[in-house]
Length: 118
Image (cartoon, rainbow, N blue to C red):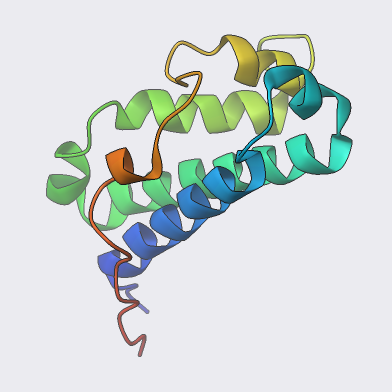
């Protein structure tokens, strides 16, 4: 069964929104100290990376329009497989693709509507 590529984009958007909610109002020290927060954030980054990985297979032309998609998928692999050494929190804190803070309005249009899946 072929998945609707919009569902992958919806998953990315939902995970990104959740990350912003999880880290709202906290600093890096608090993030590092609160295992529940960084575990939740890391899980959502894994979801983003996997959704984009699947999108690249299902809709390569659409995936090609997403900036840094290979780096995002590679970051997912770091989180899943621990390819860089050190903790995942360290990876998040020092990853060049993760800004110190990103205002919600910089993350694209309002919520995407989830397409019906068949």
